[in-house]
Image 1: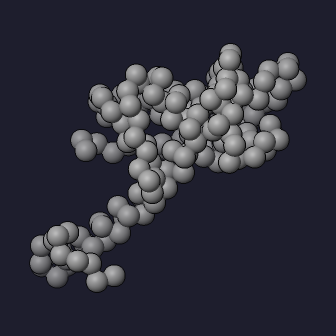
Image 2: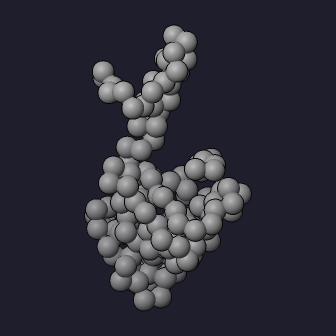
Length: 157
């Protein structure tokens, strides 16, 4: 890994936005990612602010846009926001996508389409940050006791 970047903006860059959108669209959160895969004419959500983006979603619904097209548009918008830190990190080639949103197949497809690269999702994608924090904690405990950490030795957790 060369660099680690995370979103530092409001909820339009996080899974909570997808949760809220699913509620407005009256679809189950578990099925949102699958719905997006059937989009024919994705409708972009241009607003960076979650409140304004929700207004855009409501306008699309009122205009008769399909749920599939709205959801893929949401993923495409989230991909736009994710692209900024990826560009700053100098991303090239394959990506590893972690966090709960990585379970959303529509989001994975939107990332792959935008970056023209394979996006890998670890099996325990939603736990990767917690595992990293635990490893950092082990490293710091070892540093306090002046012994170099060894990840080859079994953990006595």
